Image 1 (spheres, rainbow, N blue to C red):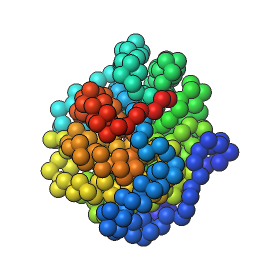
Image 2: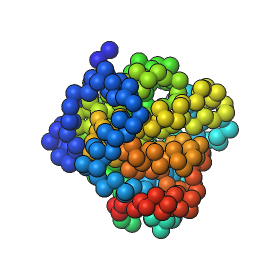
Image 3: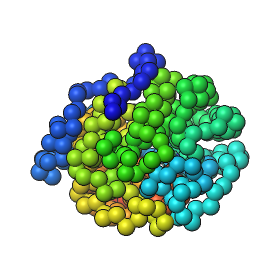
Length: 331
Ligand code: SAM
Ligand code: DTB
Ligand code: SF4
């Protein structure tokens, strides 16, 4: 099956990042095969050519609609197909969302990312979400939402509300995808990314590693991301958080150095993107996180929770960044 982005209007994506090269899977896999020090050195060189290597951007997540999701994503505690003890809730009220955004801003975050456990938003859900976007943006925060699959018109409405970023992950290589999700296709995801791009919203798109995929399949994921033209402005790299009750609980954990390699390869293949060290930090020690920064990660999820699982305490993250002499960027 061909996996191509449909309907990209390049004019609408003026601020988007052009693709640098044709990253065939074999070329990406060859990067993974480099000796660790050589790979990290190359990633540092690329990182320093495009960013201040001591600055990290902070995004805070909020689950605005938790649980009861129709999709069967094997990693996700919010799927109604699994019993991970996550209670299905209604969409949060605007004032509660704005209070959480204000707290995130006061804590030093520059982007506020609102996540909903939907296959795709119903049209009646969009108006309240747009109010949230407007309210968060008025606070001077960058706005991001992740609501599942979007229609072209929904993407345009979100753009009109002032949305800065839409998060929608490819999650894995196309060859591995069917082992993880059966209720929507890889092409569905590419279509949503096309609508987001076409509407002129910045694309936040990454994936999960540690799901039992091979190194070649990790390379396949990165190649898919890097070959999007333009490639995403933000690339979250998640390490699977194993949640009891999900099909992927009990998967052999990924070698931590392989996670660092994935960050480095993302940095080399997408030089100007924000590479976000995403889910899984709570299970990493500080030395490993420092290696991820060295490999070119320049963004983190910041705040005590991800969506339903734990993230390092904000104060602990501030202490880590201070120990590493790292600054945070403003929106
Ligand atoms: N429902 C929407 C969707 O799937 O597009 C948005 C929310 S969904 C929870 C956002 C992303 O979180 C997923 O695409 C996946 O990459 C990540 N994620 C979910 N559960 C995870 C887990 N247990 N470990 C790591 N990442 C996870
Ligand atoms: C992304 O790539 N990772 C975030 C965000 N985008 C929405 C979500 C991680 C979720 C981890 C599992 C949980 O807390 O439910
Ligand atoms: Fe639903 Fe998103 Fe979880 Fe998949 S990852 S089950 S779409 S909330």
